[in-house]
Length: 271
Image (cartoon, rainbow, N blue to C red; front, side, top):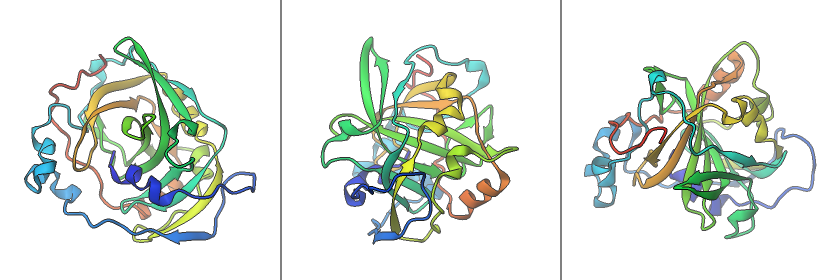
């Protein structure tokens, strides 16, 4: 999970459309000013040397992503409970590496967004779905297998700080994905425009991985500089399958965005 899709929320906040219905091609709303990066995914092994504030990328004890295995079992802790509406509004754009969407909300009020509750240290904690974006190939591997893409649902706390990521592995299957069938036409990987959309049903993505009823979870970090820790990661056991055409459409507008997997250390997998 990169920091960029979340910090873009203020820039990308849109006026909600009054038009009902599922998302379709929308008119261009505005142009995004992209931040210049001094790091690259292809050289993620050396991020800690680029700037002092990136040091955690090198020294952190709970860095993401990590390799996961079937023989680790699945989690029975931190069970997520979702309160997602049937449609959301927001801005669809390309975050420089692939498709992304920032959800609309009143300024500085994150609590109006779709919510998820889980237990942490015996206390229920609620977080809010602020954005989603796609990495290609997948950040995580399971049993040494890497999916063609990985979608991240990024949740923030009430103050807007990134706290939880739901990770969906995405691979080609035998039928189209309902969720991706209702996502707008993809922008090209170098397109800097955004489109205001409404009517996206984020529950469809949850349904296609059986509502995260089976998952791995661990304590991790952002997957791009400054690699801040304190994140809780959920990776669905079920793969979100898409049609061949949908997979090709996703990959066509993506550029390489997988951080090198990190050594397991203080991640407390499934604990």
